[in-house]
Amino acid sequence: MASRRRPRLVFERWTDPVAGEILGGGEIELVRLDLTAPPAEGWAALQSAHGYQVATRTDVAKVVDGTQWLADRNLVQRCDQLLAVCSAGAGYDVIDVAACTEAGIAVCNNSGPGAEAVAEHALGLMLDLAKKITVADRVLRRGALGDRLALRGSQLQHKTLGVVGLGAIGSRLVQLCAPFDMEVLAFDPYVDEETAKARGVQLVSLDELLQRADFVQLTCPLTAETEGLIGRAEFAAMKPTAFFITTARGPVHDEAALYDALVSGRIAGAGLDVFHDEPPRADNPLLSLDNVVATPHTAGITVEAARDIAVATAAQWQTIFAGRVPPRLLNPEVWPRYRERFERILGFAPEPLDGRPDRPSPENTTSRKTAEKEAFTR
Image (cartoon, rainbow, N blue to C red; front, side, top):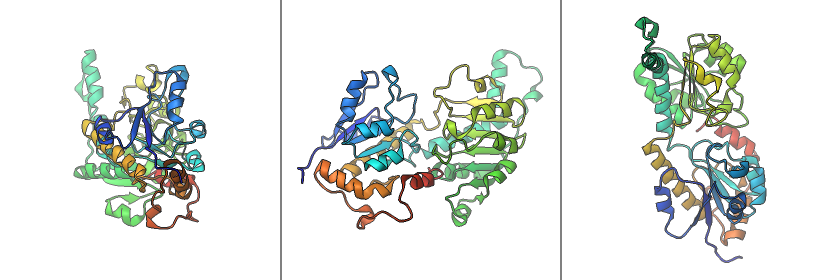
């Protein structure tokens, strides 16, 4: 058996400096990935890393020469000492879970700590669209105010909310909307009727949700299952008075189809915190529309959320390198091979999964199944 080694963790940045303070005691070697340095320097750091805290957004992960430090198959294959990869937030679309599982690498996200921030932002977009707050602000600033009745909005009270993804964010949004006495529908193939009832929602098919909801809210991460989930047919199924709101990931919906639905009056408006390309180009057609309210992927960026996520991130890395099962493990089927690699590389064996002897579950032998389940449970 190899002698016990000090683990090396490569990170691009923390959501709050407190993560570095927690991890800076010396037990874990911290190496910052410089996105502006020549790629050779980045590869040198990652190829000796045992853990990688990956950047959560593709625009943040771009560096010189167009290199991206996302945890894709190429990175996984080049970094044979890598034991675990974590994303800072709930979304993990910057990580190739299947490639990591094949290589014996544990994958974790950080769902939960940022749910309040994102849910509040989603509610804010609902209120903005219904009350025409941003539209009215634009009119005033242009000095084009004529008849105030043209800015007449609507109320949330007694409307129907449709939530796609009833995880931490979606469930908190439901709670925040309770004072408005809204009817709440949810589409989530991994939530049972009993759980939905306890959260005060009615489980329906996606088609039914789209047809009945006054506000369609996407609160699910981007996975193979959710990519392209909302397209032309889905926008066509919505009410012409309905609003589309997303704090998920851009590719979950079709941007061209959304634009057409908005300019044709097929739907009333949209609140967007995410885009296919981030940050979106200034000439993105959606940004030219008065019935669109947009923010640059800032739903989860609050002072409180940044600190909570950083604390949870640091705690999860401490758990990983102590040889314990991390709380937000996305690919538990990797554990037998992960234990073998961990012991060979760091010199001691992690604990068995859930305190039981390791053996792959017959129901869950691929990372795809795990990732699909996580798709709606942020």
